[in-house]
Length: 79
Image (cartoon, rainbow, N blue to C red; front, side):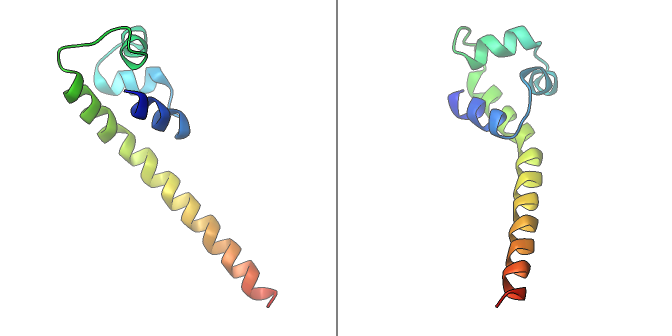
């Protein structure tokens, strides 16, 4: 869950947000993410968490792409 935790933080998604999408309350999700609780369906939970984070990742990629295009456009103006 460490990779999911890192990605969740990088994307600015709160534990309770992801927990809600996974049908797990914040306390339980936090325990799972921090390795204090290991559910029987851990692999499934990891897969679902990754799927739930995908839209946030796509938005971040698109925002980064747009910023890079703006920067490229500005650089071309100064050539």
